[in-house]
Length: 160
Image 1 (cartoon, rainbow, N blue to C red):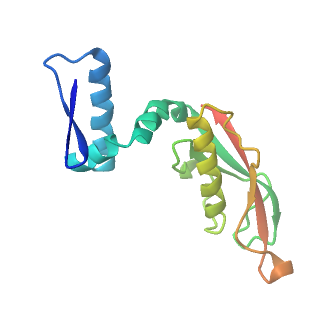
Image 2: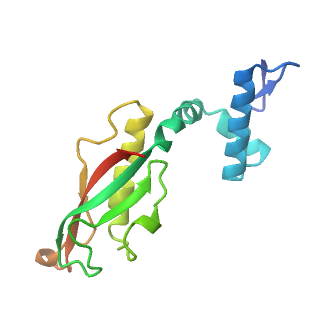
């Protein structure tokens, strides 16, 4: 494979014969282009970021894991989240809404998002996915500070 630069973008010129690995790699990039809705130019930009090569190579490590956020403390929650209630996410980052409660308070979502970033980063780096700081709380400050209530969640990672 030959590389050349034009307009600060590295482009590829394929040889007549591709190796099996190159065929697999092209299939992955094609899948990502379709999934993300990228134009050819956007895909080139995406491919030219070395970080994306590393992340795509590790994406398979996310597929086999489920992240569970379990309520471990609850007091005065208006949505009535209770201790033991669980919220399920794929390690890829999407909520498995059909497995969790019918109602989800929007004020717990930012805490889950922050923990997901850390969990994904640890998986990408080949580390134990459970962060050292694996608990978080909702954005309601609780009755003591003028809010209504508060819940605390704990992250758990399980293999599918």
